[in-house]
Image (tube, rainbow, N blue to C red; front, side, top):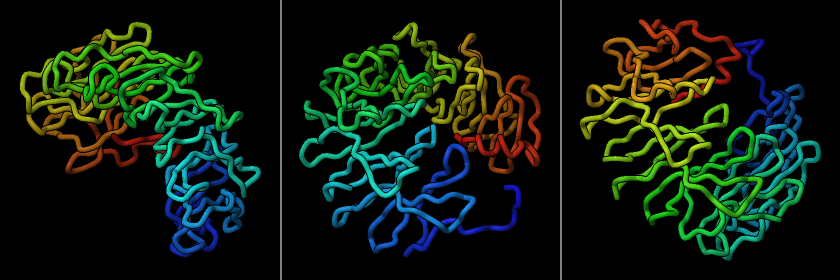
Length: 362
């Protein structure tokens, strides 16, 4: 970034280039996935100060073994967590390698059921444990916790269940609460639940009861302050709407968006908390079918929406950085203030470099 316009190759020799990469939290190194042997995907680590000098991160693989592409650094940058069939070909399990000692790997998950795999995982914010989804003794997909310091000793997070859990789960910023989506009450009806990560073995219904037999919770986001959740669900009818619920008062949710009166109008999947956790920015066609405005609602005053976009602007994608909302229409890129919405400006020079790195578009 300090010398734009000049590129330096970072990776070492490969057969077909580097497929995926992730930069370390401190920005000094990166891990990438590549083949140096035909049809064998492995991980390599390189410091950015010494490009081209790489070390293989994983250990020796079995015949036909490969590392999967969903690898990531722990938040403290000291290790890399990854999946792959590194023990038995065709059985994907969970592994880690300390960045300081590349060239070997340690299995994290408990023994898997025959012919099953670890499906996905998340790493705690304090880098001490991993939550992962796998096939449990109940012969259903369950969520497990395993401490990185105590590998292969895993505990079911949520207690007994008669359902399979979906791939949507997340940890609160303090790592004490896991939010997950599952059909634990009625088969095929997905709702939100929480589990206490310091007192494993039970779960609490978080979302409000669904009133329509065909309704579901679709997705969710945990507030930056870790005290509440917003989620998208067709609670009452077939309209997708946004709801807010606190961990302190589970099962009692407030509808954030104004009432919807037509089945063709709904809140779209793009939504996010503001940085202070007091508001929500979301994309919705509440007033005209397929004409998506960008709206702001405070959690203290649900049901009242303030447009961020100007007249005639239909939003394709958006991002929020601090108090600035950046959105894309079919014509151009714009910026506007969330706290004082007005006429959006063309976003020719809208953010500093540090903000660009932190922006996620919805």
